[in-house]
Image (cartoon, rainbow, N blue to C red; front, side, top):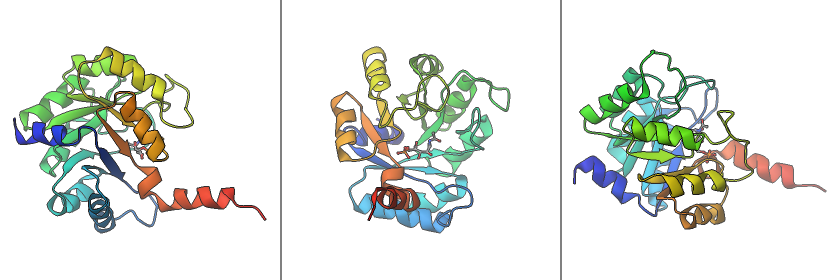
Length: 226
Ligand SMILES: CC(=O)N[C@H](C=O)[C@@H](O)[C@H](O)[C@H](O)COP(=O)(O)O
């Protein structure tokens, strides 16, 4: 088993935490995200998902768990690791697994999804295809993806935005594909995470509910009344 295949195997049945801050936010700093990554590993996460080349470079030497890397460019259309060059940069920065948009939509560099996947594989890393529909999952597996995630459920127009994780889409993936299915997106609490594993997810990725203090604070504030 290669080191990268081992990294994917190591998250089976486990929690991966997405450590991301968004443009303009106070925590948007590689030093801060690296500290957050160390904290979630201390808490028991078996994997870290992180955005941006500088964040990946800062995190890689500090954590010895599966590192899922991506580059986000904007928030419309294909924005998760949209180009072949972005995918290669994630591997160079230390990602074991590169997360990239797994839809069939046109990519900004005009290359097919298979080209990004081949470039990652050529450099010894694996690919997680972030999908918003079953068609995306089947398309990305055909293009060579090593695992698929429900990351884009509700964000591509193919499906409504579910209140919690899109368990219906997760079940479709689990019933139809033969690669690991990773549950990601709107997993709000431990019960949601367990529901994903029970539904057959290989691993669960939680972001906002663990690593986004502004939104976590807002849920408390919005709940309070006098
Ligand atoms: C759609 C999109 O851009 N998702 C991103 C993917 O990396 C992140 O913004 C999410 O935080 C991540 O998927 C985890 O999801 P949640 O924060 O809901 O637990």
